[in-house]
Length: 198
Image 1: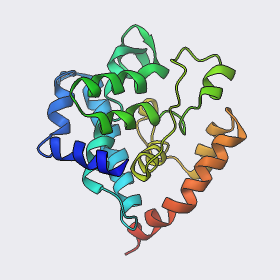
Image 2 (image 1 turned 135 degrees about the vertical axis):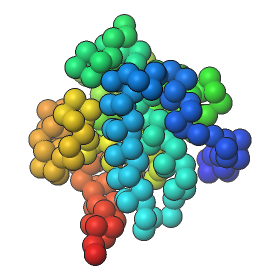
Image 3 (image 1 turned 90 degrees about the horizontal axis):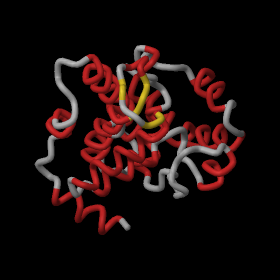
């Protein structure tokens, strides 16, 4: 798996996430500004988590900046999205966009960051209007970005949430979501604390 990922990385060494995002978003739009603010905060948080973990930090920055690239195709008027599909599709749609550009590794971050990752069972039990496919983060990089993303909400001005707020939100889904998040917090949360130390 990691051999293939490195091969993809070689193909995108000069890739600029901002230039790719601007292919789909107008820089003057409120949606672009909302997306960039959110994505930069997620990238910063993810890189803080990754400081003491053996991961590809360049990839984490790139993928975190583009993880929500598919939102413009969904309908979420509170954040100026006026597409045709439900918001929960944004990860899957982002995957399709980046796959078309040959960014297969980055595309997996898009589809695997929603919630704490969706299983086929989650999709079926909640009757979600999504393709029945496993959408759980697998690599450490995917897990770190998914973890970092839970701290920020585009509809709430991207103010960083507390752990308690995140757990309360996850409690609306199932206990497994809380357990998965706390497992990540034990692995990556220490790095966040260390990165804030003077």
